[in-house]
Figure (cartoon, rainbow, N blue to C red):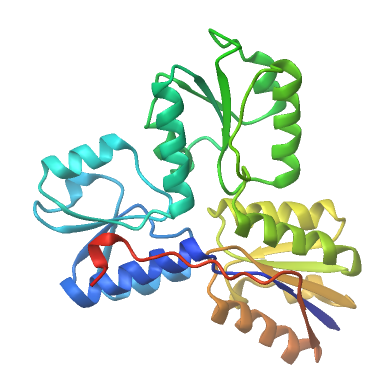
Length: 307
């Protein structure tokens, strides 16, 4: 068996800075320390921090007054920030800077009187936070049918934004339909989908044709990880989305000559290597590293944690 180990894979710059922010906060303030939602969407990361005394909450009422609270990499709405301030919480903003930028753009367009079409997945933490910037001005679109039902008050004051972790192909289809229906719609000057999401999807696209099966390492609630699994399945290969080696069904890999292994942007590299090691030991597999692009993006720690 060959293992095509895709790169880039795993942690992106936004995930790195969120995790390092939580580590630094634990060192400085001790535990318990609180995080609004999961710091990143990965079971291993969350459980490891939970064992260190981190408390993950979905309701600010569960955070004692005056406690330290981190905002997760996915960001929060202005209303959450306001309520945290009212409770006297000491907040640390670990939002991915690319998501912070998305919030700022949404707020600016709303102030300028635009209707904002946000392409994304309902209920995702990032989408909830961005929509909270201007709920009166933002319309969520998840599909082509949603685009066809759009009836904005002024089609000439229309802008689109996208969740950072979408499928590139699906986002393109939706954006093409938006431009077809509303020729004067405007969009961001930079890429709609974040660099890390693009890079991981492009790596899979380049390698999947060589594979008989694929392992996508990451958690079920990770949007970008789900998109990687969808790409593998669209490539016609047997695909397993696994949290770790204990979830791998090796019987489904019996007889496979080539297995593609990749990982979502919040999957720890040691868990990826555990999955690779399982295949090496079970099938005497040899590992081929395929790095399609170098990533040298780094973000600063939140200002609350900078010395």
